[in-house]
Amino acid sequence: MNNIRKHFPVCKNYHYFQSAGLSPLPDFIFQKYVSNYESLLNEGDFRWKEDIEQLKNTYQQIAKHLNTEAENIVFVENNSLAMSLIGLSLLRKHEKFNIVSLEEEFPSNSVPFEYLNIEMRYVPHQQHRYSIESILQHCDQNTKAVVVSYVQYSTGFRLNIEQLGYELKKRNILFVVNATQAFPLFPIDMQKYHIDVLTCSLHKWGFCGHIGTLFITTPDFRKQYPTPIAGWFSVDTSYHNDFIYTSKNKPFALRTSAQQYQFGSYNIKNRIVISDVLNFLTGIGTENIIQHIEKMTTILIQRLQDSGINLISPVNNFFERSAIVSFTIGENKNTELINFLKHKNVIVALRNNFIRASVNIFTNEQDIIALCNGIESFLQQHT
Image 1 (cartoon, one colour):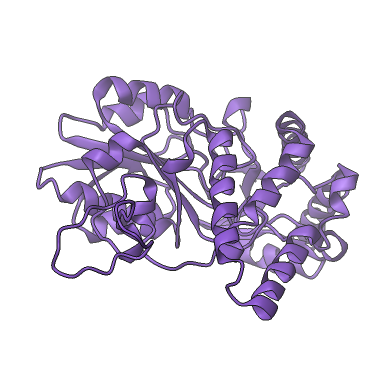
Image 2: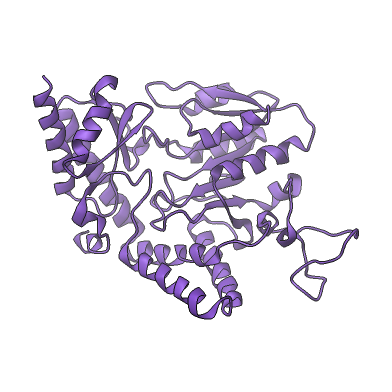
């Protein structure tokens, strides 16, 4: 993986364990952004139609990684908007219902629904784990959807979404998965896992900055729960002579594809770069990526355990691990340790009052040694 590090200038400056907040740009993505904006500088929107076609190709590429169809994919601004659209769509049925979710979810999985006064049932964690049985126990005949993250943002717990999707399908309960802390590092099969809606904010592990959130819906979901709001780009113009619908006070239909959620103009130049990221990751290979992540997390976990550090992340079950390892030295000292490590160019984060370290494809053993040596140095000075 040393050849990968050369593409990440951040490695020259820091031991970077904050990809779960935002992954740094690789050099070739930065150059792609520069090239894209030079096109805007020198040509305006001359290549707009070419960009649209490239975005369509990008959707096809994403679809292959998730075992879905390109017509099911769209970008929205962020995960909070995606969840708000889901909540508003469900409310249009005027039915009594509840949504089941998890106690430690990132607030973009809860605030949109609570703001809409939707009944939320939160499954309490069991040492930061969530069993499938505990989730199902919170469901009843009024449960319309289960909304969960594939990987928990503050602890890295990785849920068995294949088993959960299978059980929810039998119960006719919608399955909504936030894959922000998993994709594209960990494979996802929307059809096999019976996922009705998948969201993913790509600034975490997508290596392309803030380009928005993938919002992927099945045709059945859109048919039963069409978009609750619309814009000019949502309108189906296949029966018109122009791509812009200009009629007034006349009936119109929305696109049946996920483009019904593409309400208006958007930054195509930013979004098409995900294609380059996927090509890069495909070149490395999914198995190689997973093996490297597993190796780095295993080394980190062992070093922390050897130092007597209190691990928060559930690590006993290998298949529940992710790229995130969280730990604590005591709530009153965690922030102080983070600042101490920062002065040693070791970057970690505070989440839920835990210290969160996330490894990545560019992480090496020297990074982990620097992190653990920094922790040990801090503890020696504060004992």
